[in-house]
Length: 164
Image (cartoon, rainbow, N blue to C red):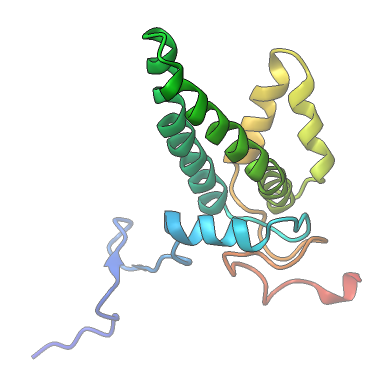
């Protein structure tokens, strides 16, 4: 009988079928990301993974659409009894999530090795939003940086600590 020395939960890469592929670390689920953002409500320090940032954006979009559709339907049918309460709820939701949304994008920029002040590039007409989108899509910078260790855990052990 031949024994295989590879762990059970690995898949073999296609490159000569020799190297086991182990995911670096699992991403967050949507609920973990939302809990993380609300737990770090006003925390503009540290780093945020792509999964945390994009699940937060998806959650905001879903909640906003759930609140916005009744406003549109109520306005189209001239039914203020539907439009006004949902409009007020939408406004309260936006006010409640403005600070955590800013905090998570600043932490996401920190994860890509940039200062949070790069957020203001989004104010540049036409190209600013595209540049900010590219920054948020980028992968984490390897190892720790001035904003903390890599949230994925990649490269934190081999970081040159003599640099500080």
